[in-house]
Image 1: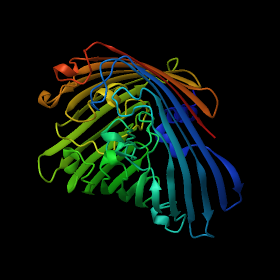
Image 2 (image 1 turned 60 degrees about the vertical axis):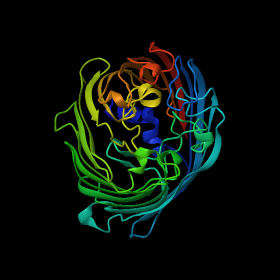
Image 3 (image 1 turned 45 degrees about the vertical axis):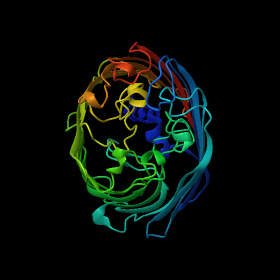
Image 4 (image 1 turned 90 degrees about the vertical axis):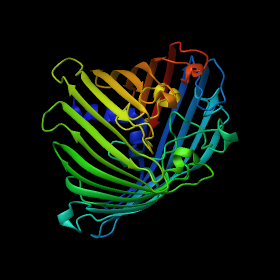
Length: 441
């Protein structure tokens, strides 16, 4: 299979990771200017045989619900006669949840909202600074979606709760699973360096998301990018939260410092994939926490359907704050398990998680994958999220503009909510299903 086609299909199927890079309809273009109309839409139908106690709103039973969003707007770039390029985008996003609401009760099916999503301007330096490479300086500000590394700590402001908590005080318009809204409300970003070699990002990010306690933070990265892989350092200084919305854990963000070392690539070996990150958090009024993972994968490129097999071990200490993690490389990163990662927990804290994945590509436009997870709670006095999950999914690019993704999962918790877990009524196996359709023009 052509590697570039496979790569594009994989990216498209991750949805959230590629939303800001979706294709566009060209309204105007010349040698120095482009004006595009952008449209993307997603719909999902979901059913869970079991409910979970996270919101305190649900009882024992099942939930069936639907989610959808449509994002529409304009983007442009304008050359400045040899002194770089100015660019920007503006978009609206309409989202909704119907039916029962999600299986954790964060939404109740009544959410309907239309708001601005993207609204940013930027400038790229072009060839003004040849030592820094093409576009070696990139400055932007406004409302935009940003990611650090592969999203282990920061991948947009994508937590989309609804009316299921605190009488709707955390409502962001529904589409909880689809994570419709991802842009940070206020940003200022300076990127230094080109696509290879040494580079750095300096960011100021401000959330307007009540579920994230309106967190404000400064982020700095230093990376070296080469064909064999990328090695990077990240520093995050969270400086402020809105106490009216903050949980006890989120109150610790005011003055918290997070440091991480990460690496990803093939180490010069074709068909090999290696990735890992270690993060340490210094909290101002309590303990020092940490989280880390190591992952290795191999693609059997000479076999039919090019099977890819990978294994990942991740560990999150008891009080680790997972910050703004999000979907990046596909199912399982960093929502680990479709049931566990979205409704039952753990949510990247107080847990050791093992993940084995297999993915095959029998057709140029079709991939089929399987994910197995084992969840092992570190401190069961804080709640027991021990269990296992198996997910089977497909990514079918029906056309260049439409992708369909069915998924079925089987989640087996060790404990019910009454026994210290989160599943309401029993620890029976939960047969979970979802069907998503994504389109962009």
